[in-house]
Image 1 (cartoon, rainbow, N blue to C red):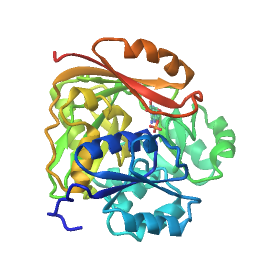
Image 2 (cartoon, protein in one colour):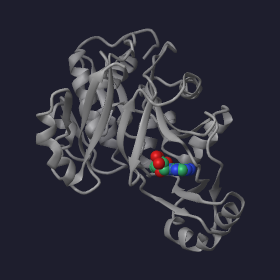
Image 3 (cartoon, rainbow, N blue to C red):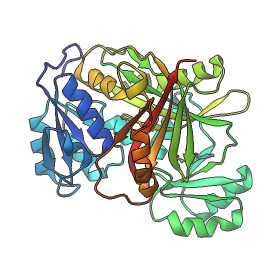
Image 4 (cartoon, protein in one colour):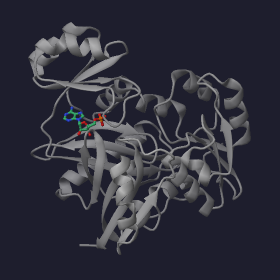
Length: 361
Ligand code: AMP
């Protein structure tokens, strides 16, 4: 795909993954005249209520499925970076991915991700890769309270353990050390924020307003705009995300999650190479959502304005309690409710979200 050419209406977007992010991207794609073809293990995934075609990935090394999928689509994109290394290797053979498979691979491995952030001058919490319990004990002795995270396949607080004491090192290493892990210092942040932005193939960038995020049990609970922060801190956050996108020669929509420290410094935590939960408010508070921006960027259309026309608080609907809140939210004026069509309401599962809008303050 050359940089300048836009995909014509009727072209097919190939989405790796069929969850709620694929579902909401499919709706945005259809509105712009594109068709969505999903690659996932389950033809009943949430995206398949609205997507056009499905290719079943029988296993992470199902080369026949990946090749058939790749041949049937005009551009390949992603709704998750938590991909098996064997699947990444199969996707790497395909030339038409946006963002690049390399960017997705980097964002899916905390070691590659944090080394990249530090290399381009975006600060993070102090961290090291862990080879043994000794590394953990030494790090905690030097930095105090810390958090051990699996390098790969961690999300929503999964694959993480916190410790305050070097004496805990053996226990934590025994629990998590079967796979590559890192340890990072617990940082006393004032608030958590994210910047969601799109970057086109021509290098144009459109950033949505900085979002303030509150997590509960490691899972995003609410996202609020505007974020309670001064303009200089917000500019630093947007600058960090912009440098990440440029440094990866990124095409598509991405998010950078950050910690805001006392005094206004921002520390990067995670890169999401895809539409992000903290950008769901854009569906209702902007003329073009993060999903539309993603489709625009990967299909070579001009990016839309990221301007916001309302203040917003997005709340995730999680597990059975989230389902129980649905009827009330659908009946609430000024609130826009979104349901993901999942068949099971397991605890901790994101079932939908609701965005409460207010006149812009
Ligand atoms: P993560 O999976 O890295 O996004 O971590 C999930 C949540 O754990 C974050 O959103 C924070 O609320 C918390 N957390 C993760 N890393 C740190 C850290 N280094 N210091 C303080 N809190 C953290």
